[in-house]
Image 1 (cartoon, rainbow, N blue to C red):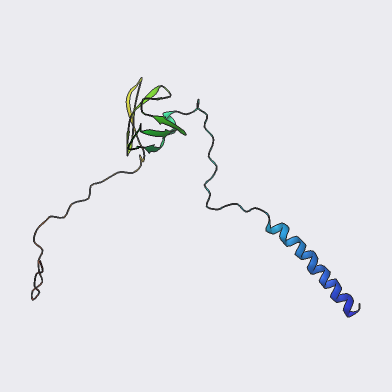
Image 2 (image 1 turned 60 degrees about the horizontal axis):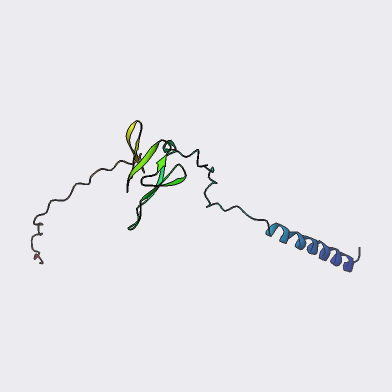
Length: 131
């Protein structure tokens, strides 16, 4: 093959490869930081058994809770129970079985931190105490 023929053949291969690159570059990539798609919940499926997911306590208006994928305001029914109270750490439901408290984070146990005793601190020898 002549040198011009080889050069043209190589140029053709580069042009063909260049035509394929944009096709691959345009393919959408999945976002690795996106959470998995949630399973849609219909209004009839929502119940207190599916768990408390979030609370919203506005300065004005009624407090709401996201229970089983549905926003429920204080006084509204969720299943057979009625939402009675919304707190920062959970909700209170009242139903046929009585009053039930659902925690927002049930697996988190809060423990009080011991408070340091107030008193005079010791000053190292040779040092002046600053007010």
